[in-house]
Image (cartoon, helix red, strand yellow):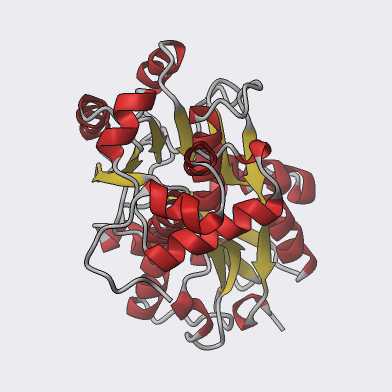
Length: 345
C-alpha cells in the first residue's frame, strides 16, 4: 500500500525503514545491486513502493554529475509496435529511478538530429533511439565522443558499432518462407514500404531473397512490390500484377510489417481478391486485429515490450558502468503464428 501522507518521503526515511545506510539506498537507486544481497534489494524496492518515494534528480545530479533522465527518440510513435516498445522502456526506467523524455521524429532524419541535440541540451544521461537509419555517421560520432546510446529495433549498417536490441528479423522471415513453400505455394510475393535506411525491412527482404533463391531457384526481386502506404493505387497495382503472374497457381503475399499488411488487405477488398481462396496472405507484426479478420491472418509476432525492456536495461547498465564490454547486438526471438490465411487447401 502506498503512503497517503502529504509529506514527501526522503532517502533517510527509506534507509530507516529498510534498516540500511543512505549509501546503500543510493547504490540501489543507481542500479549498483552487486553491493547488496537479493533480500536487501527486494526489501528496499518494497519500501520505496510503500512510501511512493521519488528521488530528486537535481540532488542526484549535483552529487553524481548525472541527471537521472534518459532520452528516448521514436521514429513513429503512432505505430502499435513503437508504443509497446515505449511502455517497456518506461516501465524499466521508472522501476530503476529514471525519468524519460520522449521525442517523435515521424521517420524524418533531420527531426531525429534535432531531437538528439535537444535532449542532450537537457543533459540526459543516455539515449535510446529508434533510428530512421539515415544518420549513421552522426550516431557513430556521438558514440565515439562518449554519449551512451542504445538503438531499439533498428540498427546501423555496421551492426557491431553501437549497442542494439532488435528482433531476429532474418531468421524469422526465412523460416516463414520455408513454411509457405511447404504449404504448396508456387509463388511468394514480398510487399514492402521503402527499404532504404530501415534495417528491419532490409533484413526481412534479404531473408526473403535468400529463401526464394534456394527454394524456387529464382530472383525474388521479380516478385518484390514497393508500395506507398499513402497511395492505395501502388498497392492495388502490385496486387493485380502478382495475381496475373500466379495464373491460377497457388500464390501468397508476405508483407514487411503491419502497416503494409493493412494496405494489402484493403487493396484485396477493393479488388475483390479473396483471402486464401484467391491469394494467401501473411506478414510481419501480429497486431490484435489479425486474428479477427476471417479466416485469421498468419503473422510473425515479435516481443516489442521485451525490446523496450532490454534496451532500457542495457543503457542503464552502461550509464552506471556495470557493463564495459564491447557493443552488444541482441536479437529477440520472433515466432510464426499460423492462421487460416496461409492454407491453400
